[in-house]
Length: 271
Image (tube, rainbow, N blue to C red; front, side, top):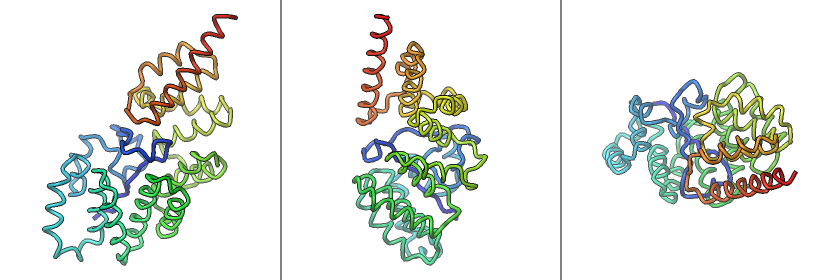
């Protein structure tokens, strides 16, 4: 059975109980599709034959019942415990997820241990235990050097704390080189914007399909880029059309962007 990695990008809303809707309909824009179900839309999930994929469709109770019935056969499935952990994770039952991820460490397969380590890192970030989470990610990478998700999550952690050189070293590595992915593009655009490299930021924002520019985290950053460029009307339009996630941290960031925009518009009217 294919090992499934949980992907949860580490933005400022990483510790929130809500998760941003990062579903990607076009598999050609999802370079991590072979390692995660979290960005699958309903159609892509329905096409999966794995039992755990049903947890991502909201069938947690039914799937967990089936897993419990398979208990005596668990030795035949090295991913058994981690899949149960994943079902609890996507249903926001953090302590139960952590328990089963620790059980997964008994596996003889490094790939399974790496998977559990990656997901334990994400749980650490829920509680803002950044150094602990970083340690889990580094251990995951050591166990499975070719797994993209732990590398990607580590890059997002670096971005969050302003370590752009370290993040770029990961994102420009052979593991991601030439890959098309919405969040890869956004990561590059985000780094360029905060380094005030508007030309590079523009290049990456242009690569992101318009539908994904409406996602709240991307819309906020894109609007800030447009404000820096002086394209205030377009920035206002982007903020107005954003898909509101109801995540408190993103709501606050949206308010901040709107306040900056309002100030710039007022200044423009006085000139």
